[in-house]
Length: 83
Image (cartoon, rainbow, N blue to C red):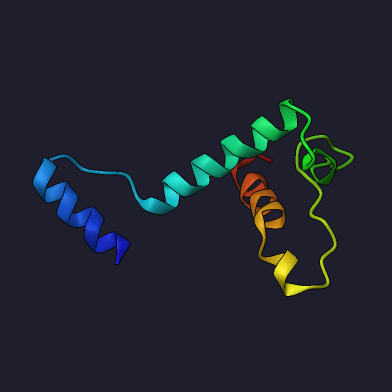
């Protein structure tokens, strides 16, 4: 449904718009960087691996935590990091 709205907006504006997934990944990566720079209550959940490049995903045993912001943002951030 959102993709259809995006296509209609492209036709109205006459300009190609970025994919919603790309925008979402960009916003999530920016949010992770902001949390890492400014200590917030979520800061303790974001720790780097021993290499110092990728973030450690937290251990999750409940589905409601597994699909929350912290694990998903870490997964997206790690997928964007160059190895």
